[in-house]
Image (cartoon, rainbow, N blue to C red; front, side):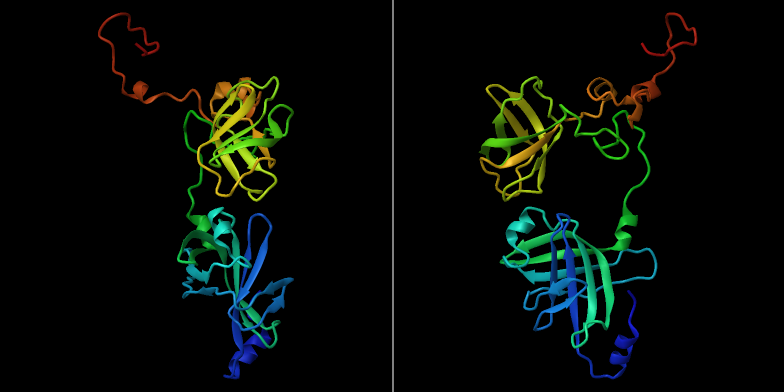
Length: 294
């Protein structure tokens, strides 16, 4: 929304009752509201909590395509932004909207900033979060790369494969955890060793619910043993449930034989290698104009 006529009239009086409000919408659906006013404010179905310790530095905005940026500062509190949630990555990429609000009449307000949370630093019971404007999305590389490996992510719109297909996704109960990186569960009949290597593990219950990890190794003996590339940023416990997804190594042969999805392959398996580009004419044998491979 733009600046309301009521807010313009209020600002014109020279005696203002203004406050700033921030709405943070995490990717897991949790919505938090903060204000620098001394009492809670409510609008747009969000309660903006007072005394949250959240403040923002000077906001830099431009009229062109340069990236708007700012920073949010605050104290870590269990009731608002906790150190555990930051460490778990629950605020990564969260949407942020900031308003200038007349606290005596919250209908008189104007949006100051829209964007998302970037890098977060925390120390000494406080945090500092980078705020990225909407034009940050224009600062990302676009287009396709010419490479042998597939550029799609298994199950995304370009890949088109349904990972929920029987035999490619399993929801299981954790029976053993080591350093939040090695997870064991009951053996899966008929599922080969390495089936989940380079796949994905999603936590669906427990304190780490909503987090995921990428699978490095997958073995089966009496039990199934999954090893992640990096530990989960929140504690996983015995009895929690996880969902494991078959892995894809991005090769055309895997796409064809494991997933039968080669018609959607997003790589270039027949692209010439660098060796082919540097090969020279042969000085022996038959020079027929055929393949230059030695």
